[in-house]
Image (cartoon, rainbow, N blue to C red; front, side, top):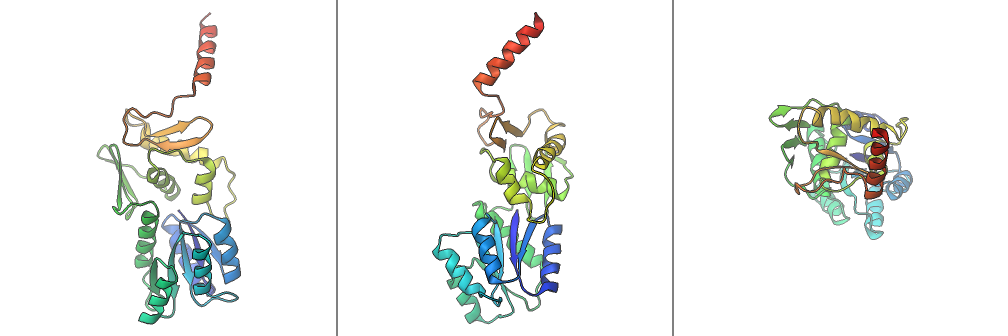
Length: 250
């Protein structure tokens, strides 16, 4: 999932970004309110971590603007201010959660971010279940058919994103926007490469494939409907393929 981290204290920003990336998140950064405003309005972030005390435009003013203009991205306020009044001000401005920098625990921050990501996909349960596969979003563990599936952080991020949209097609553009940050130098075809990696681990050892291709649109993970199979090519393509097979036989 893709996060915007808005923090003007550079040592803390570097530490937070590193920790979030190690958790498998794609992280963009902004060091002042104006830069954060531009990025929040032009990129579909899953979560924004927003400091209150910022140069140019403060966090509370930013958040009020975003909510007034219809930006619904979940926001975690992160600030040196820890009084009850400060928390109330942040939450009343439209924040979804609030953490003080005083004695900041990275594990708690990561857990709160994961909870906001689940909330964004209307998932309260930390476990995502798709047929015989279970994804533990807290530990980032995956089990299918009773077998643990080892995944790299990027493979896991892609699988989790597909699973959040089980039964629905996600385009390559959607995948790219949510899983790759502004600093990533990969080309767009890396999505297809990681789909192949996932299929080798998630589908190849089992009878029923879960990761399906929707021709001309993108990819999806099977939903609950056992008859739903969008992997089949459209009728015109199927007919053309049939003609080619007949020609080969002749």
